[in-house]
Amino acid sequence: MLKVCWEGGKEEVYPYVWLKDNCRCPSCYHKVSHSRLTFIEETDLKAEPISVQVIEGGQQVEVVWQDVHHSTYGTEWLDSRGFSEESRQARDSRYRLERKFWGSESLDDYPEVSFKEVITDDVALLEWLRQLEVYGFVKVKDAPAEIGQVRLLAERIAFIRKTHYGEDFTVQAKPDPSNVAYLNGPLQLHADLPYYEYKPGVQFIHCITQYEGVGGDSQITDAIHVARQLQKECPEHYRLLTDTPVDWFDIGTDETGEFYKLLRLPVICTDKNGQIRRINMSQPQRDSHFSVPPGEVTAWYAALVAYYRLLSDPKYCLQFKMTPGTIITFDNLRIVHGRTGYFSGPGERHVQGCYLDWDEVRSRRRVLETKIDPYRSLYNQ
Image (cartoon, rainbow, N blue to C red; front, side):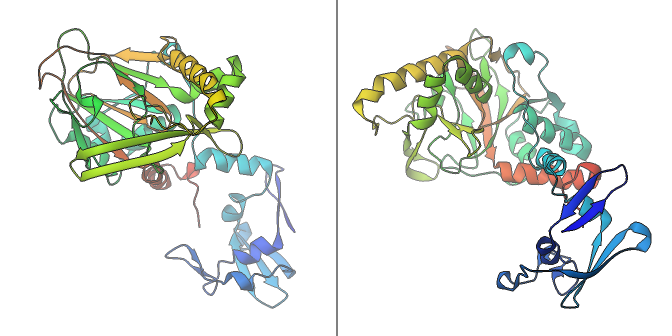
């Protein structure tokens, strides 16, 4: 392995097989597309250099391999790709920004950004995207209270993720609705679209007209934070909600025609490291089919009820009334949202929403970091 001692005393080692695999010469690497040109089966597992030297005043490291192939690596490029635990942790923190979990008492001053600034200023846009990734919830204030603004905001980032409800959707009380969101009764805390295997990760809801009487308040809870609390307080409830598969479905007809979505996943989805990556919660879309042994059913229901009670506890649940021109933006994999009931006629409360994918949101954040804040950027050539 190649050992490099950096200024400040930091040391890194680089495996030779990795160095040769990442040769930056024109025969091995296409600079314009940032793409490797070599073939996998040609990987030199026994790569060894015959010489290594620092050139260009310390800006480059030149390696000559046993097959006389020459490779040159920028020292900044090498430094950003260290294999030490410290370097890997630093990269992980920029690959996906570290989430900060919250309850209502710790998010009294929840993040807010200006619609006009986000639309016109890339620095404000970057700050909004960072806050959205970290906190999972950001208010965008002072948007025009007009149809189409949620699309304008979304397309400042990327393209809208279309679902069977269309590209953007309108929520108003109406007769014979295809979704309970179109009723004016209470809307229980939920995460949208649990029946999508690759469900949209970011959701926007824009208040155009608000009901002026009592009711119609928005509710927001950091469901991953609450799940972590549930794990501490009742590990068995947590285990049941992470291990038990649940059928989520949506059947009906809307803008795109007839649909029948069905997906089987637990309420709390974790990755191989036990980190919570997705919450599925939607009482109306939980199927009556339940593929578990009958002796486990009551215990699972007890776990679900305990979790929901925590989600709706004022200690964790933010409740506020959106004003016309406010857009709430949130992580649909992490945040559950709801609405208190209101007693009005059609048209007295009007919101419009849409979805984006986290892949596109994070991509936009990284592009902006490369331009505005290159120190934090993951990529350098």
